[in-house]
Length: 142
Image 1 (cartoon, rainbow, N blue to C red):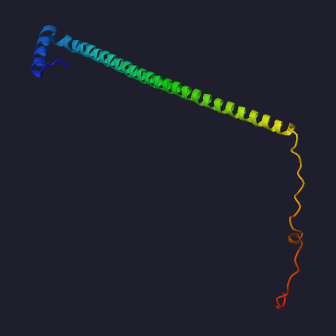
Image 2 (image 1 turned 180 degrees about the vertical axis):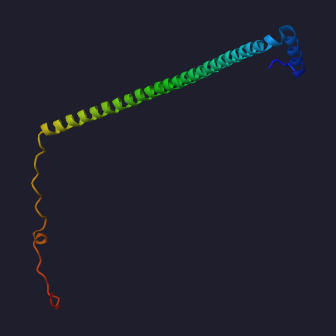
Image 3 (image 1 turned 180 degrees about the horizontal axis):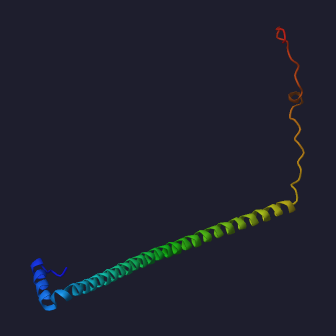
C-alpha cells in the first residue's frame, strides 16, 4: 500500500519488539491494526461517497439534457401546431366566404322573375308527324 517491502516490515517489527518489549507488542499491534482498519474504512467511505456524488452529477446532467431536449421538441411542436391552426383557420374562412357567395347567388336566383315561357314550335310538315302504315313484305309476322 505504501510501497514498503517485506524486509522493511521485518526491520520495523524488530525495532518495535526492542522498543515496546514482548509484553506490550501484541497490544500495540492490535491497536495499529485497528487504526489501519479504521483508516481503510474511512478511505472506502470517502471513495464511495465521491463515486455517488459523481454518479448523481452525471444523472443530473443527463436529466438536464433530456429536459432541454423535451422543451425544444415541445417548442417545435407548438410552432407547428400554430402554423397548422392558421392554415385551418384560413381554409375555414375561405369556405365561409364561398358559402356566403353561393347563398347570395341562390337567393338572387330565387328573387329574379322567371323567364317568359315560349310555346312549343308547331311541326313543319303534317305528313312527317303522322304515323305511316306498315307495308307487308310478304313474310309472316312473328
